[in-house]
Structures are given as C-alpha cells and as structure tokens.
Image (cartoon, rainbow, N blue to C red; front, side, top):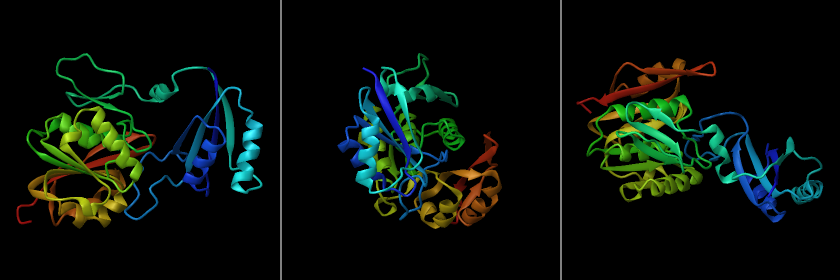
Length: 299
C-alpha cells in the first residue's frame, strides 16, 4: 500500500490540538519531531516539554484527497493560512522502521553497542542496547550522548547504583544496567521521555531494576554514579540539586555542554566535585564537552 505524508511546522500551534485534528481527519499515524535541528530536547523543570520549533508529520493512505485534508485542517484550526508545510508521496515500505535509515548500529567504547530495535551485533563481548527513541532525545547519534555512553562503557558499574538526570529516551540508564549496574533511576520532566524510557527499558529486559520518575522531587536516595546530559543552563541552575543525589566519593558526568561553557559549569560544581580533564567531541562546527569527576570527601 502506498502512502502520502503531510509535514507541517507547528509554529505557535498547540501540538496536542493539531495531533488530534490530524487523527480526526484520517491520519493513520502522527509523529512530532524537531523542526529546528536542535538535537538536545531538555527543557528545564516547569518549561514546556517540547522543542521550540516542532514539526508534525501525518501518514495517510495513498488515495487520500490532500486538498480536502488541507481545507479541513484550515477549518478546524480556524486560520486563514497554514504554517510552512509540504506533501510527500511515499512508496510502500515498513514505515514503522523507516527511521532506521538515519539510525544504524553504533559502538561506544569497547563493549557497548546501541542498535535499532530488530537489529543485532554478532560479537562475543558485545553489550547490546536496543532502542526506539520515540519523541525523546537520545539515540547516541549526538556527541553529548556518545560521550556519556563511552564514559559508562569505560568505568566499573558492577553493583553500583546510577541516576540518569534528564533521561530522554532512557539510553544512559538502560546502558548502565546492561553494563552491570545493580539498579538505576531515570528522571525526566517530559512525559514523552518517561513513556519512551519505560518502553525501552521493557524492550531491553531491565525494567525491573529501573525506577522512572517524572520530576526531581521523586528521586530518592543517593547514587554511586550520576549522569546529567542536559544543557549548560539547567546544569548550572540545578548544581546543588544534582550533587545532592551523589553518594560520598560518587562519580559524576555532565554533558550537553559546549566547549566554551565548560569552565562556567565546572565552577558551579567546584564546591562538591573534583573534576578530571574534560573530554571533547566536534560535530557540525560545534565542540561539545563531557565533564567528569568525583565527589569531594569533605562533602
């Protein structure tokens, strides 16, 4: 069966409202994605948990009258003109797997592999995490996630507890559990991230040892390892809160930080953390950093 795809930038339109209209007008599936090529979906607590520039994509049977759909959408939204949009005719294929063309199996460090659900790695020592990111950030394709995954692969997680602060797809917590962590907590204020993390954990057989939280207030206890792959602003703003979750002599990894922001972020954590030399990764003209260290003994 052939399909037609209607793709539209939402601008100021409410995503939930538009999604509902798409479905009422006959969409077989609806997907929300980032229209601004901003790879890090990490709002600060209390902010709207979507990208600032969101795109909606509706999939329709190939015989759908798209002119009629466009008119129906205009009427339902009560606007004279739709935001930027286009229609694509798509030949029949397994659309639920179509995103795999941009996401293949990736290796991080010595053992860890992140693979699309349905694919695998034939290697004796491989630790494989299968992932469908859904609407949440975190497939390993962005340098901030890659830096964290490589760090997790390189440390001894056996028997340790871990907190993934701002978990997105849950990739870091799930990878840690797969690498030997005894238990993990994953926290994100984005409801989409919570759903994606729980599903990905179940798909990887680690849900029993993973607690998923929807707010910082739900985090309980202290952790041997804390990873926060968010942005420099929230990392600085919540430095006290994040370090309060770290056990004595615990290990901390911060990412989502541009090279020029690294000193500011390290300064915010300096009262609690003895930092190691930062690691850097460049992509698309930007250099990202990973900041790791141990909790100081006096704290």
